[in-house]
Amino acid sequence: MSQATLRKATFVLLTAALAVGPFSTSEILAQAPAASGSGQSATQGPTLSITMDQAVAMALEANLGLKADRLSPEIQSQVLAAAKAFYNPQFVTGASRFNSESAPTSFLDSTATSVTSATNRFSTGVSQNLQWYGGNYQVSWGGSRTENSSAGNPFNPQLGSTFSVTFSQPLLRNFLTDSARTSVKANTIQQQITDTILAENVARTARDARLQYLNLIGAIEGRKVAQQNLDVARESLRNDRARVGVGLMAPVDIVGSEASVADREDALIIAEGQIARAMDQLRQFILDPARPDYWTVTIVPTDPINAEPRQIDVDAAVKTALDNRSDLVTARKNLEITRTQLAMLHNQTLPNLDFRVNYTGTGTAGTQFKYGGNDFVNPVSSTSKGFGSAIGDAFGNVQPAWTYSLQLGYPIGRSDTKANYTRSQLQMRQLELQLHESEISVALQVRDAARQVETSFKRVQTSRASLDAQQRRLEAEQKRFEVGTSDTFRLFQVQRDVAAQRVAVLQAMLGYSQALINFEAVQRIR
Image (tube, rainbow, N blue to C red; front, side, top):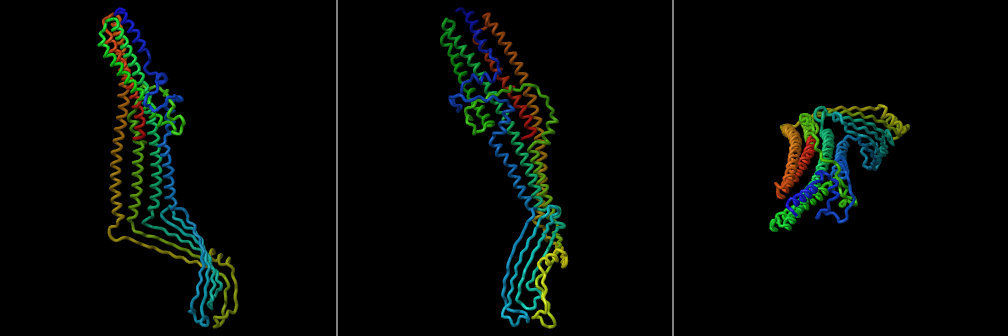
């Protein structure tokens, strides 16, 4: 075989080896054998072809960490319910019986050896702390029946009924706010913080799922390039052995080609392992661990790598981040909680001035005795009234009683409440400064993410232009090889440069897609 014929044969074989397109993801995965050490079984499992949006939806549904995070708002709602329970009405009822036997203390009972008394009582009522202005009320009603052996009692048995209303209202301290109302408000804000944190975790899971999806695409395309490089190295080794066979090359000269094949085989093994690793990482995000084929299903990404230009409005993105980013929203909510607590502490430094009013209506019934003259032992007549009469009198304002009171209390000297109020003022100022610093940091992060998008797209453009130049260089080198002005080494060198540039284009496209994902995410999460 002549040297020119060998060059032409080599050219044809290398052209065929490089004829496969650079970004056919599903074909490469279908052709790829299972990577050793990947943890997959020898039997190939089912194939799951998904888009990036489908991967995100599956991640939001199946991610175990997110399932746990979704319980946090429910937990916080129970904390809030416990704080609000302070204002629930309290119903109280009870009954009692009192018996006593004592020595006579009245001259009317001087002939008796002892005086006995028995009283049955019952009561029921409602009390409630009010959410407005710190007041509270109590409404109660009760009844009693008393039998007494002492002489001279006007009623025996005596039936009683009492209706009572009490209202207490703070006028200074605890008027505008107090610890209970502060707790409700703080826990309401904390509920909003919990919802924000959940939304942040959802957005972070979606971002991570997209990045893992891209990693799998990159690993698959990386294996394709590794396979192409191996094919070129093997073809080079075959051609070198053919040249040795016809005496155009010394046997020792093929050692370099053999080493190149070994290196390319090692790179292919690594690329296959990267596919398995990337697939397992994506599997962790999108698949339910309870799925029977969790470890055997083959995930096939179907979306192409995004390389379309994107118009970036940096100012609008910064405004969106400052308004909506989860860490800033959380910081503002925490600052709002601190303000609420500060208002409560300031209120607690005021004097304690309470107003209290009580109304009591009573009614009395039973067997009433009437005595005549100076005889207080033997009644001359009796009348009976039922318990309904006592109830009517109690609720009919027949025997009303009103009580009004004011109570003032003020600590002498500097109280611990004033010290706590001053400390909270300093802490609030500290939080305000930290929030302002965080806003500046977020603005810088968004601007940097926008620059990354622009820079990454420029790299896509330059890497593509470089690939076009490398391909034109390969065409020129192939022509020189055909006419005998180049050799196999130079041709293979140019072909390796083309393959390396394909890797650079792939990395640039992946970097641009990642930059777009991070740019969207940085406006919502840290």
